[in-house]
Image (tube, rainbow, N blue to C red):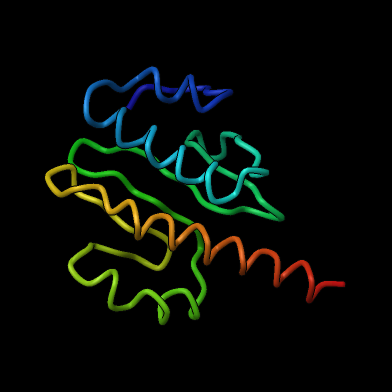
Length: 125
């Protein structure tokens, strides 16, 4: 894999085209619609969004997109049924390119993560 030094999400996106790029742009748009104050950044050389802490990451692979974050046990319990049929790990959800982008699910994930981050800030006070 080539060494990269992305500074912006736009730079990351420049490496993709067609449907993969469109899918990533849709995810980015969903994030901004649900969390308009989210800060865009690059972390681990992939797109990352912060909203009172890390909100979510996404990245592209040859056969899938991944949305990731070290998800909580409450997250996995809440989305157990929604995520059936998707390959997951403790911090990632793979969305195959040959399946429709689950926009409603992504929106629900961002809403849930936003609430988790706000709750964590409140608990820290």
